[in-house]
Length: 517
Image (cartoon, rainbow, N blue to C red; front, top):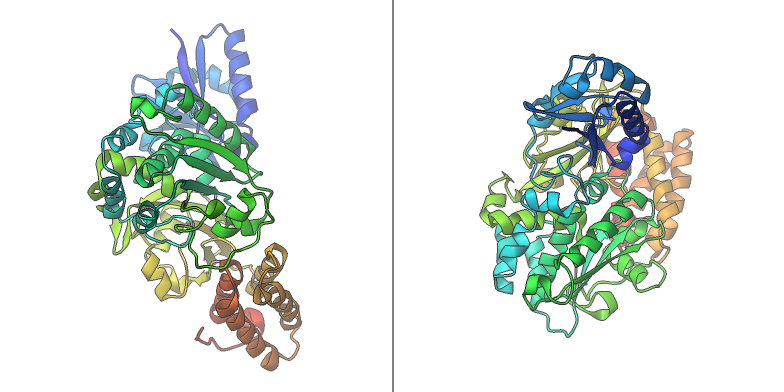
């Protein structure tokens, strides 16, 4: 009887040596005449413990980590295949404090299954949501999503049910579903983890969306820097077609949905939905004027649902257990769970999925373990490179869209990057302007010119030149970017710049904190 061992195929784990660990375990097992079965799973999201090796025992999965290839011989000597004691033995995976305290809904299967095994997916409640949707009226599917309170997890937090309802009620001979998988924000990796660790959940979610609004074609717009996700998605899509979960006659229902992956070329601005559609149409990625909204006139001028990976990956659970079940998680108007990605100067970097409502402080210390350097955490940027920098005085803010808006911040895609007290916040503000200048599509003047002038202005400020003139000028420039830009790239660049200036004035050579207004 063979021993089952799980080793991640997740690209984050692979970058930390997972492939070498898997090869070494296989070789030594063969040399020692031990029968094993290695399954490459998704990462559990505890990246400081990668490579995390899990051995199936009668008591459950025993975790060992972080394992390097040169640790493997010692693990065999300690009889790790039977859960033997070793310095890297962490105990039962499900009992690890970081993992046990989470509320995994969207990530329920990630790390537990072989990502591209349809049998595994079905065994772990896969396609139950689609089976329900096939027996429901379109309006009832949309109502389930509306009742769940699901909002866009890509950053804008727009109610998903309203978007779907608009597409459903817009007459057209052709409609589309687009998954925005162009995950370009710094410190974010939840989309990648889903696509690499549980691709079928995204395929199922998009299929349900297609049934709900009457769309027969879907596209996953994937960033080219995600080759592992590309491979996993294509494998899952092929198996879904073979098993009748995609095609002209889904599970003999007479309903059709087709799906394919399209690769982006690396432009950050193509994470914006209208620029993404321009790219899908084979054009340069330039932002479109709105209206018309994509839900009315989107891809090729047809009604189009554009949602991000986590939004669509949340759909199967909602159709399986009902909108009320999902809505019971969270607080206020922020319902359900959000996969939060901890990065930067933290001891325990990784992914945490929890219901809305916990505070930044809980995330940073209860899960993140404080700074990796051991120094005080000075600032945290939430929501990617266009998110505000929050000082320690705001760490007790609950993770909630409205609570963050009240302090002029954004939850965004749930990326959290921590900095200790050695960071220069003026330099970070300068970087934000530089980022905007580099990534601007160039269509609107405030973003194209304003970001370049802002970068030059920050250079003057950092050299201490004419602060009484240049800092008010920086504020005026940010006001122009905020109110005059065509899309969120230029419109949100003032968030990191002004938050750095307001909360950390000494880094700019200013002694008094002033308000954003």
